[in-house]
Image (cartoon, rainbow, N blue to C red; front, side, top):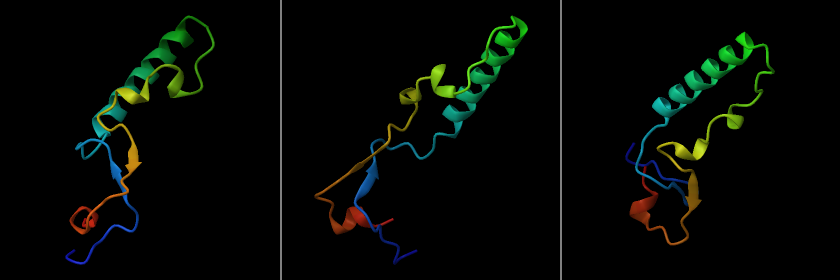
Length: 75
C-alpha cells in the first residue's frame, strides 16, 4: 500500500483503532434491559441511544483537519 493516500482531510479524534468492544458491551446492556422490561411487561425501548451514551466509547468521532501535511494524508 505504498501509494495509498487519503482523499479527504478527515481524521479520527483518538488513537483507538476500533470500537468493537464498546459496541459489544452496549448491545449486551441493551438486550439485558429489554429482557428485564419484557419480564415486567413494560414497553421496551426501540433505540439503543435511549439507554446508552455513545460518547462513552473509545472513539469520539471524526474531524476535518485543514492543515494536514502530506505525511498525515498517508494511510
